Image (cartoon, rainbow over all chains, first blue to last red; front, side, top):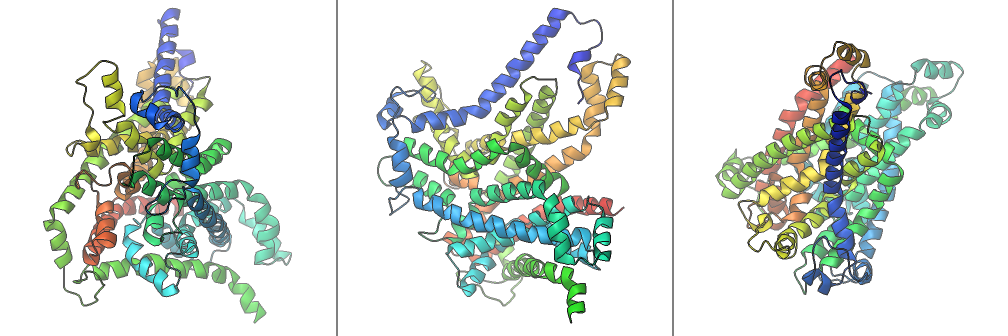
Length: 297
Length: 290
């Protein structure tokens, strides 16, 4: 804490201080409005009828609240030829995210454990190589990956997308666990070895029980990454296996029929809900992941 | 045998990930680099022809636009997001009672997909029914705000949406930095009667140099990889006025069927990223070993 406001040097009047305080809160409030405005507009637009959108004001509250747009967005909106709403694609995203998060987190935990506690010659080089992999622009692997998925016979499938997310996720998950396990004294591992415990036994009964915070951070990070992914989803899926972000983009940009802004907004909120929910209930861990992924990486 | 297994377990555990990274990161980069030196079009060819794809790339007006846009977008996005993030962090650092709630509000856009962000701003900025129509409805009949459909201005809508999405994150980075500054020095400065703004400009901000660097790296990385936001907000249009290298690469790879151009543009993107990230990572890793 820097705590500057409470202990100003002399010479400032009490009223001056109060005015300054008000200006400060006003500025913070205006910024809060800037960040909240798009969400507010999305929600109110999704609850209006098309008629009201055409005649009304962008930021006005709905005169008549209707959930029709939500129903259409969930199960009737057209993503091109098909008109099943975002529902099937929402479940695709769930089917991609759950195994993708689980596998990459598990691999990251094991890798991080090795790099932090079971150093061998070359382990640091391997870690550095994995770390550099986090930073490549994925455009540079799109073409060969498309061919590789074809060779492996999983092109355009959900397992194919899970595979891609795991491969390009392990760099970060390894980094998270490595940085966490490095702070655990290596004497602990040595003592356990003397007592005859092996590699997996030590992981299972010493490291895993200590790992809950970093598991939460990693799971949230990976879930947000995979759920919000668009590049891999649009490049490696086909009709029927697309994740929700791709379906949302198709709904918004489909050119057939009348533009239904309220449906677009409802679909966007549906696509955003899972990550928003995670952010609201576990914001602390979300931020920790963001800063760990950037400051340390 | 069991003894060997026991001794080599750590290596065996790390091996699959390491092999995967070798193939899917480094092998694939090599493949793309190789193909970028060939005459590949719809299908990849493997006989090296030199820098012909790069010559085509830099002769293409569309790539020229994409690079220019990256330059405009990158600089504005990084500078504004950093300034805004710093200002917000300093404002929030003044013993604000509702700090937790305000922080949550400033940071939530970071949890959203760029596609969601793009969809929201596309609606807000559309001239027919969005902000322009709203202000006209208030009686300002001649008010125009058509950036989204104006080829000259469309790139700035992407800057706006990207700042909205990421500035809260920069604020969180800076706020953590402000909180880690040594409190004793600040107290000493206060005792000496140094005004608050001087304490910030002379003591606190200079001591946060590493955080500025981190924020710069993260933001430039985000800028170069920006793809989803452009697709959702402008689709690269009007025309290709808001193309970025990432959308150019995607168009070449998946809609134009021009693998050579896709590969060479991807290589340029990677070189830009590495020019920024490698010195940083290198110094990070070295300082950890010391």
